[in-house]
Length: 307
Ligand SMILES: NC(=O)c1ccc[n+]([C@@H]2O[C@H](COP(=O)([O-])OP(=O)(O)OC[C@H]3O[C@@H](n4cnc5c(N)ncnc54)[C@H](OP(=O)(O)O)[C@@H]3O)[C@@H](O)[C@H]2O)c1
Picture (cartoon, rainbow, N blue to C red):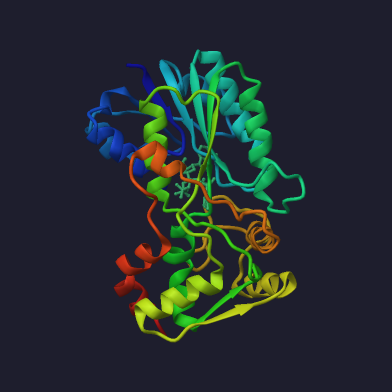
């Protein structure tokens, strides 16, 4: 069995995937890349290889990927400026003889009219991967439900309002854990070369509908407040959220920049992210979990955040 190298291994997605691979008995086959190896000391104790690698220092990636047959490139966090970073990882993998690369991409990126800022990074990275000569699999993840329920949710509960520029647009948010389970299937299975999967949740919903579920499950009155793009920017500006990405920064638990979030809302509003598929079930053998289930499982936390 070939060794598997994972970038972003210290992040939430990377940890979920690594836990699953270790549970399968693959610890010795794993090469985990991080800018801070101390973050992954427990993985070394579990038998994984941990190597220093930085998307901004291509020479570190060249040695970090050595010996791997498969790779998961987990996209970086610098939204709007990741193509150069990802190119360094793709070039390193191709040069080191990695045979198959999988990539955490994003849904709805084929349409050039999609205004989401993340689109450019992902479509360009996919293009580089297809041209690399390696076999590839694109894991086009929908919006993580975790981002809206677990990270933004406490702020909604505290204020009693879900403010969004996504209007009545729909998307099928997906559990990050389900995304990691799909990556596991691709990295440890066969027959996924040349495939592009849409990794989505089971329900196309508006944020207004999600707000109603959150209110029903927690018993706390919540209002959905649709706003325009300018008002959405103003809200993030007032919170101190930067418009451009700042590495490793988080404001009130939100690690994203407002150009990303506002164009994301616009893309939902205009229907570019209204995509639902059964790929989670096809890849993992069980249905994708719902937003309602995430709210129910975290109801106590959400209720505790209520104002
Ligand atoms: N579909 C969605 O809704 C959605 C939402 C949020 C994020 N995402 C994407 O999914 C990815 C994984 O999500 P997550 O929740 O696991 O993110 P996360 O917890 O913030 O982890 C991000 C990872 O990126 C790594 N990283 C950042 N800059 C790097 C650099 N210069 N060189 C090497 N590694 C670098 C970090 O590694 P070290 O700090 O250890 O170096 C970290 O492990 C994100 O990075 C983002 O691209 C998608």
